[in-house]
Image (cartoon, rainbow, N blue to C red; front, side, top):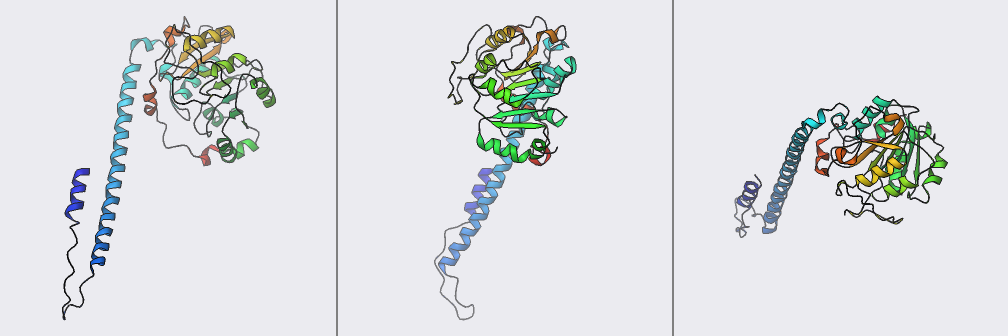
Length: 324
């Protein structure tokens, strides 16, 4: 298609001819500059057509990629090991989460029930794609911590009504193991709030390890799927860390599961993209989740390419999300 368009451009744009001599009955012939100007205008229109067709081709290619990813996801979930009703993978769906975390959290709280409908999330971006916006939409309240001043400003503007109504607190902060407890205490959240979500692309393990100001009932934390069980790998703590797109972030699932157990939590599942691990307080999990709760049986490898398979409709806008 693109090749044929290019051919048509050059067929319809011949080299300019020498100016013709004026005749008495037809008036002066167009100047050479006018001819060139007209041909340039024609070429400009053709370039616009090519760009439009290329955009259409890009969109079609993305839809095909999305469709193939969805088919691959369906094949993965058809594995018999997911027939166990206590597993969480088949319950996943996306509303505002990056992947299917919204659905997995909904199923966890269906099993254990919410206690106070309060949340805390570190690393929320601009507020439109995270693990707690769906809960905020359903009447929950809580707090967000975000390191980017531009994103915090966008949240304060876009969610002004909810902030004003006291349903959402937003703070700009670079979260670390040395300041996390002070940051949380200032937010005045209940100690046993329902949900904590940690996604700061680096010191996640160290921050959870240091956190003692609250004992959430459920914890969602990003893990580094490159390091499979039984590997225990933890990124060295670096208060100035900024993720550079490499494998230097977070910790392996085995390491995080061990930490969770020490803190009184049970690993109950991971999402299918190999991004987040889900923990429930041990006394709440009981017989409602997969047993044994070991990292080897619940681990999901890195399948980040499946993110495109989770679609919830048109992109989120602040006008909807900002409602009280």
